[in-house]
Image (cartoon, rainbow, N blue to C red; front, top):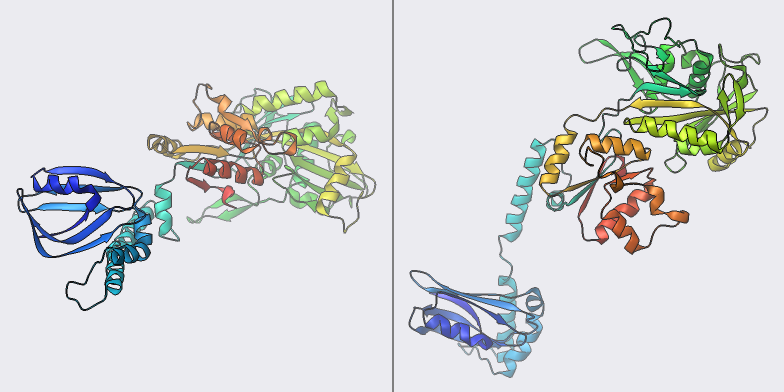
Length: 527
């Protein structure tokens, strides 16, 4: 005995079942009669077992009637689409009454009988154990994720994560360790090497270009540049523009280790300055802060204005041309392209000289060269002030604009290495083999992003996919985002977005979702 649900309009399927055909599939169309009842089937005949309920099915866009036989009986199943389930209560009542369907027991009028049949079919369409089964499956998924050190706040997120086709990720601290160390500098037209290990300022120094440090990480006397006034001037201004501190702390094993507290991008500057004896705790009392303009992802720079309370004297061993003895000095650091464009003069041969288009182009070449080595580059600049060019109650943006309007003095570049996080390359390869695409969205310079992406297999190591990395300025030419068609075409092929602002990350993800992709976001992009 088996309960069958047949579409009368698909009578050929019913007839073929009685003729012993093992399996057939028939497409059934809208508004065809439906019969439901208990049947006992065998290969040669069909015999009605208990009553036949007749009705009409409405809003059936397409259904499949599958007929198959087993050793004891033949099974007939119809898979109705959702519109049928949703409208069965309304239409089945009207149509059933129209064809004169009667209660076999005669206990109910036709219209009431059809309502009972409609409600019964609607409830039966959803298995009672389905919610429990789904919950158990998702809970099992959560348990498996915990084994991978992933905590799911909502179990429904497991399903979405399993459907993920694209992972959008930040770079610094996510794909990389976020433990940067300064390895190169460019100042006053000269290049410098920086040796060291970790955050320990007691090991390492600053040397001439291509100089090789010894086993003790020190440079030979001929190559050592720790007393170079240009280097000291740049690092002094850079340090006064930092909020990060460096101190020794005990680790879990009870050993003292040098530990920076604050922004990871500032740690390389603080450590490099300490290597040549420049410490914030010694500078700040003589040059306290008057104003702080914090870093912004949209401005790509930060500024700190200090007041000279050192008797009108500059910090020790810095070039007079920097004029760090002024009553106030604005120290500005940030993305090279933003800082360079804001500068009108630059330090060269111990003097401040005008910075023209050719000089800027040469600086950009240095930035590209350093960034191509997967180094993160920050530009350092300052501006001496006789008085503050803004009021205390002015908005932050107005204060920064007032500082930049007078033109900055370019002091140099600091290049830091941020090693790839262990296991990241393998994770990206695993995701790729699972047809999950990884997209890097970072605020870093384009060349730096490309170099890191090649190292971790987001781009081909041979550079053949470098065209699949773009500066986010390409997303918004003329300060207006591309139209949806052009934006979708760009995000559909590009795997690395550099110089991204927070709003760029949102537009990129919206574009990918518009194309039907399920996207995951990790790193600071989730904020």
